[in-house]
Length: 268
Length: 253
Image 1 (tube, rainbow over the protein chains, first blue to last red):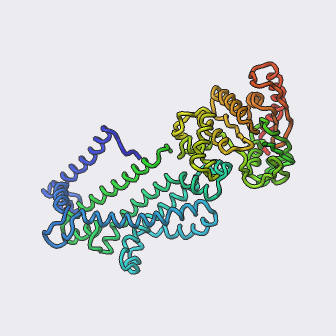
Image 2: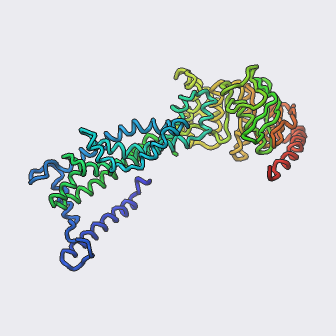
Image 3: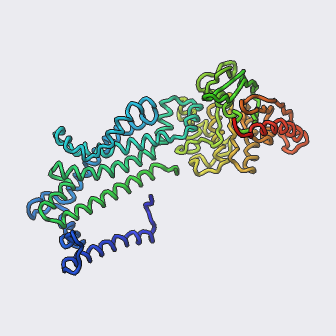
């Protein structure tokens, strides 16, 4: 994936956003003047980009103008990010060793594969009711964990399995024991895949946390904020919250890519 | 020391007989080239000598010790280099000493010695991706030597190089071999290469892989590639090989 599109690329990138915002503004304004309409869609009720921007700036920090505004968006972002990072770290600590075991050992693979294949097909959202029921607190961290761990496991397994067998032979003839081979050949070779797993996993986790916060109704978190704003009829704030989710997800993805590039100096 | 004996070795893969009753020897300090049509089991012989495969029949010994399990007294040089891409030149060469538990100071000394020997000074901190094919194989050779082997096993190490680099690397290999004088078993499918490098050329036949003929190449070193004696030997080797290639390239079986 390209991170730096170059100056020209950047302008074109921004252009698509600007055109989209203009179109959005235009459609909503036309709808409000009754000169344009799409059947079955209440176009006029959608906040315009300008209204969304104003709402975003206005609710960024704690402000005391009415119910539902206990926290600013910054606090909600912080709370959600914290849950994603905590759930992500636990998933990483559990998922990487499981992935290495499953990828390297036939026995462990046969043992875990049926379980992994069934559980990974249960979407994080499906775990929400159970997690409300069994977790006194931290249920949403568990939802993130479920979302993050499977991409990590699957990518780790794939990375381990695609280790060049000649590298393993080379290490063997150089005197490496099995544990050395895992440590010095398999893990470094699988590292880029592991990072990809983490990146995809955190993307899933970020989506899962928003859903979890909507249902679990923790008093702070972006999911909660959006839902609450919708309840209160503050649609501009609601849409502002949605956009923040997208932007943060994008930043997370890019950060891990940059981190990966920093650690992996050898091209691959 | 470094005397490899291959005694009545047979090897099957599933139901395919890859090697049948292979017998030959690499004497101490000798450079032996193994030549044959593709698919005749040359690489299998090397893998058996490295202990990466087990023979179904017969045995191999190095200095009187039967090879069972990975043979840690040999160095293996692979055709496609098989360097660790996440390790620099220096770190690749230090892999063997490191896993054998040498101190970092010793590793440093060893890697420096072999980096100098193969002519890679100045490239210590490059990653394999940043090197040409010839340089990569220099690293491969240094990495194998750094483990202080008694026997060097080379699997078409210059097969992926262009003709010029290949010639240069052959001379370089001889220079290193003359300095460090350990036994070498060198697999190739090039007659020129075998006759230029080897003290002995072992011709293998295919399906199943057997030793067909062994030629002693008693040419003084440094050798002249196009010398008249070399041409005579090359001609004999080629004749022995051609009939094999005809058989091996028949379809079926």
